[in-house]
Length: 413
Length: 199
Image (cartoon, rainbow over all chains, first blue to last red):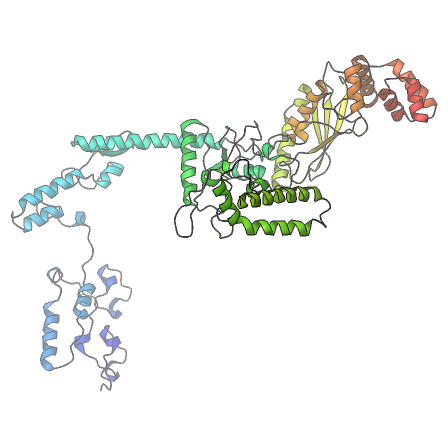
């Protein structure tokens, strides 16, 4: 006798080893009559002992979602007032009874029409014969993938709904459409374009393969290194070597910046190095590479702009290859690098020769009064100790005094 | 030494050894230690120069940063040349200093030194005495350089006059090398040399 209301899940799946002694409900309606998949393909090793059903679903049962038997069961259950199984069950049953997959071309032939489009058209009995016509035409515009690859399709030319093309010399496939001139032309153009790019690639590779780095003398391609292409000349180095050569922090103090910024072979000056996977000699290719490189760097944020402190201190100004992005996302236009030089003392002092305008002078004085006083105080404080540079300090004080006096004089006028 | 330097030096040595340049240009190298940090170079004196027929040895020391910094090259054979110190053998050559380029190899360096032996640069001298002699008394310079080549680099040109002067100083108890050096510096004036040595 069942002691639990719950359904036995083993029974529901087809077999419960406890049989009648099971304490869970053995409800036939819950039974998910699974059909043995292995038996369907004829390979069930359990034979008669298999707990799944060794039956083949009949063909006419297949298409409908719920078999008459199950709907009958359901009705019975509803009538007897018992709990109704969740609705998934019939679907599960359908899944279990799914027919064995048979490729379309292996199916026994039913009449002259074999394509899906044809079958659909015949089922509709000519109602959509025009749509059949158009879908048939559409199919004819597509190339049969089997024939295209090997020139061999299991079905005869007349039988296959797809077009069996002519042989294309370029791609060595049966890809030329038998009668559509437009498609033929399109394919030929594609093939020529492919061929050109492949040729270019092959040339590039051939050039690349033989190149050795002028510094480490290794074959760059074999070592899987990148090329460092100089913008000024056509000598070949690997990226690591040329970068190390150009880097200022190499432990070599003897070599001047001018020397290391030039090509180690021809001493031609180069402003920058372009990393590249392939060797690019000169001309249009190189221009393109440089352009691509600049476009790439433009997407990256300049290291001077990546942190708060150094922002705006990029020595390349608006000529920098990298992105000068401010924290709010806008781009800093920057100034030209030539105008950025080290600030000089003159920049901070008032030059009364060049600027004699009273108004400007007064405004300047007001603005800088504090700074100026501070500077004077600083000079006065430092002066007694500063032995080595006392000459400099003397000059500064003189200039400042002069400025102050002349400033006051003018101010009182 | 970095890996790149070692690999490169191996290639360079191979290049010099296999290139049959010994017969053509008279350049040879000899590896002194396994790390390839010390190498001995040999240069045959170029023909039509006072150094013709001589075989000059060079000490080459490879720094850690090679090839990003130049090798340290100096003559171990004494040589009378405006751009080489007659005392220490230090060479004044721009490519061994600030004009070094990473693409230069042992072969090109030795060839450059050989070229320097052909065409001295007295305006940028290493040894001022030699340079002065080269410019003011070319004949004496040539004879002295030839004598040095014979004396120290197995040259074939004999100069009996100079040898007699050297022997004279040797008899006074002066070492041969010093005698040659002092006499050369004093344009083979035995009196001035004696004064120089004994004052």
